[in-house]
Image (cartoon, rainbow, N blue to C red; front, side):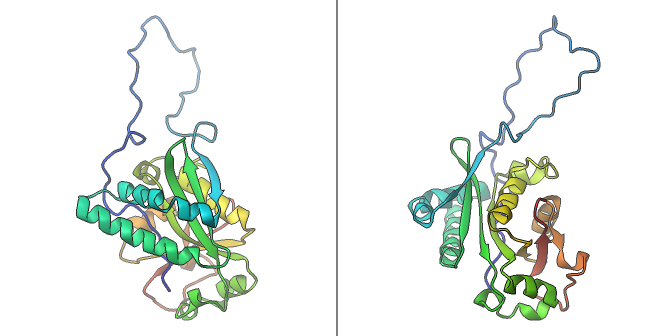
Length: 232
């Protein structure tokens, strides 16, 4: 059982996309009309990145670029950069061999994020050692092909800390598209229970611990099981 979520592990050095745009000098001659709502800053569905899937061949062709994206977002010195990049690419290569693997990228026009995963098979190797840690409802969904494992989400640090509850947040758009493309009844991912930051970020994007509802965890395990409803 190797699935886990890739999020920035250290505070990344802000990139150009993370920094606010320069603000023009105020024009004292212009005054906002009374009652005009204040416009929110940040991405929107109309101004944000374009999301689209890659074929397996395109994933391989852009493998190095995807590795660079993860390393850039993770931050750290050259040694940490190379370690993070290598770990990410190993994980990606392993998941890319799974039946039904899907990867989405976000571009604006440069590559800014990605998310990927695969349908869970209740009898498949992903469940080895895992079926004893959740009740049968998750396994039944997997057996019916209605459970989708979101194995990786890679987004700039600003997406983890700004407008997390908005439908146009990039992470939400990526995860929602993954589930919709596969007609999944539920998304599932695993997180290190000691990584409070990752769990907190996931919950801000609509994920809930399996124990928050009827999918109650039966036994303590090495991973925190989180689930996501379609459209969240």
